[in-house]
Length: 507
Image 1 (cartoon, rainbow, N blue to C red):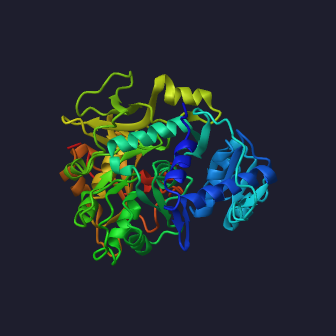
Image 2 (cartoon, rainbow, N blue to C red; image 1 turned 90 degrees about the horizontal axis):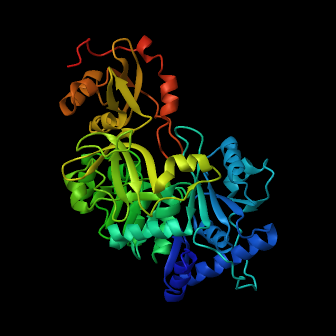
Image 3 (cartoon, rainbow, N blue to C red; image 1 turned 180 degrees about the vertical axis):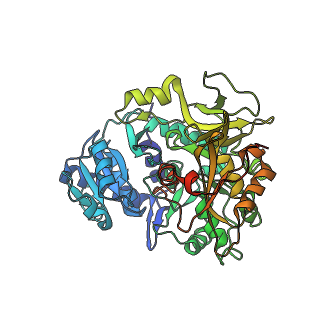
């Protein structure tokens, strides 16, 4: 049985040859044109760089039609696509290349200098597949369903990046799960605003829409005004992006009058989603949904319905259709209602494991279950709320406080532009929450305001005992995740120089 993504890509080329497949700026390719260009790219990669079945091809650059053509060319050869983060420096690029050992590195001009010192051939991303050649067919490659399609590095916000392996079968299963949960993913027209080095770009903005017979419009350089115009002009109905993108679009002057009537699938994640943001998009007739997933779950493993998202904006839904969600204790038993525990996912839509790391694969994916490292709670209706990370728990006086829960509540304040909560040493409770806040200009927000808001929304003991206001943006990875490790180091001395809020009473 054919369980590779090459089959549906070939089928859509036959069934929809003259329909749009990908577009970026002034460049657009129909399915027939994309097929021809990616075949030329495959022929060039094989003839000029010796790429063959099982080899890795590293690709770096902003998401464009050239990126897509090169990646599909590699996949047609049975090679493995290894995206490079275009915002990485030379040291991080060297680490990524050393991890996957590619046969060739294909990069845009902007990234060429960063890989020039590596002992790997380099090709120009803007030229691969562009030359018209006589070769229009490739010799058949015996690609199997369990063969890798791509190795995607995690962002490394908490440690050394790991290479997550996506196989043909795991991707097919994941995309099938998407359609079961939300049928309009099939034949969708997506707007892609995320780097191909992350799941949001590689899966939601490339492989997913094309395998499901849709099309993709790329925006290589982020501009909220341009994004709003592209949704209107291209009748985009699918947008998956981190919360910051939605916040910036909603804050733009063009948002009020923007025609977004075509947008039916709008989901987000990666940062706390406020009820106010959901309301702003809801006023435009768009149900902004907080999906849940991670690189290891091949992007979103669950996405709530619009009514669920409107009723419970801090929930990520009840789980998947095929992907079953569990909230478990340390011993693996199921947690009771409202009892925090680790989210574990059991289903076919998970990644295949980690690249050349069998022990880590067994630890995280062992027994057919994905240990996410996220802490969640279920309510009486079965809805799941993510409250923190297993490595981001503040143990204060023997009680667990989840940083993500505090961050979500503090982000409700209109004056807050960015928020991160970390644990710092405390003479009374061993550890206590510290809120690191960057406010909007001239906000006038005080530490007492932050603490009062937290006490009004949460148990008193969860309120931060330190509130530090920052002038500069929080440090982030290229995937826009906050670098908590850097903050813990930089603010480890906060108890000795900051002002502690509250007395010995925990009330």
